[in-house]
Image (tube, rainbow, N blue to C red):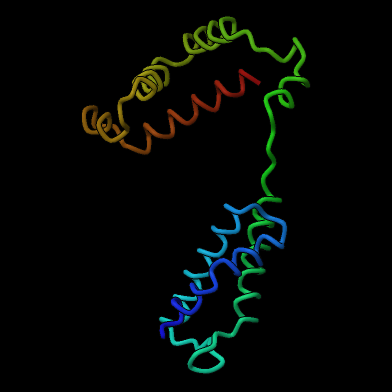
Length: 160
C-alpha cells in the first residue's frame, strides 16, 4: 500500500496529535496537510520512512508534525499585531502633519532650483520614464537619474 494512503488512514489521529500541541482544528488540519506534502517529497526523493511493508514510522511522523508546529510558532512570534487603538493612543496633536504648508514649502523650494534640475524632476515625477526621456532629449540615462535622485534627496532634507 502507498505510504500516503497508510498515513491518511490515521488522519484523524494526526489531527488530534497536533491539536494536543495547543492549536485549533483548522491550524491542526493545515499542519497535517503540510506533513503530507513533506512526506511525499521525502518519498519521491527515495527516503524510506517505513518500519516494514505495512507500518509507517510513527515516531518520524510525530517529529515531523512537532517540527512543523514549532516552525509555525517561530513565524508567529516574529509578527507583531497592532490594533488601531495601539497606534493612535500614542499620537499627540503635535505629530499631525500640516500637508498644505508642507506642499507649499516644497513647491517654493522647487522654484529656487536650477531650471534643468527642476524640469528633470517634474518630468520624471509626472510619470515620464528615464529611458523615454533619455531617448527624446539625447541626455544620458545616468545623468537624468542622478539629477532626479539629487533633487529628491534635497527635498527630503527639507522635510526633515
